[in-house]
Length: 164
Ligand SMILES: Nc1nc2c(ncn2[C@@H]2O[C@H](COP(=O)(O)OP(=O)(O)O)[C@@H](O)[C@H]2O)c(=O)[nH]1
Ligand SMILES: [Mg+2]
View 1 (cartoon, helix red, strand yellow):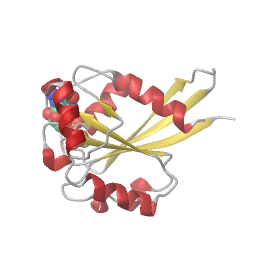
View 2 (spheres, rainbow, N blue to C red; view 1 turned 120 degrees about the vertical axis):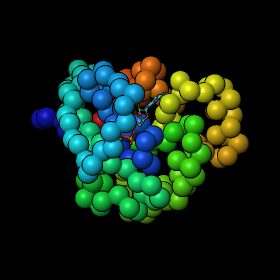
View 3 (cartoon, rainbow, N blue to C red; view 1 turned 60 degrees about the vertical axis):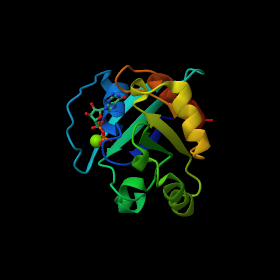
View 4 (cartoon, protein in one colour; view 1 turned 180 degrees about the vertical axis):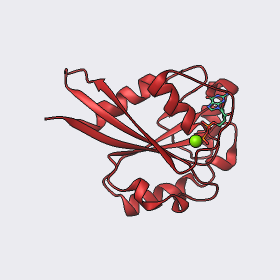
């Protein structure tokens, strides 16, 4: 049977959702900022360590400026995982993290949400990790869509987790 999972990128505008999407899908990156309108959806077939094939259907949503509740409900429905992306250089992009996670838990209780701090290339990793921890921002991974740091690894781990 063909394995297929829907994974949705969410988070504030400009945090790098589309860049992570492009990096993962096509190994490309651009400095140019083009706002995503609505959603773009692409499939990538990856091979799991046990030899099975997984179709990861990634939804790159336009994001929000205020709260996850502004995201269209239909984007979130039927997901197997959420990737909540924030920008490590912009505090306002993780200020609503706790509230947004609560919303997801309440409305999509069974769907795992991964927290990803992006634009790691712009900061010192150790310092930012300490800062986030002191702010009680718990993250699963820190990435750079620009340098590709931790991106492929993050998606591989996620693929394993949602197919266990
Ligand atoms: N330095 C750096 N810039 C990034 C990174 N990821 C995205 N950007 C830049 O941040 C801006 C917003 O990125 P985008 O992917 O469109 O964000 P989105 O609105 O969340 O989809 C663009 O100018 C990107 O080039 C990163 O890891 N490092
Ligand atoms: Mg985008």
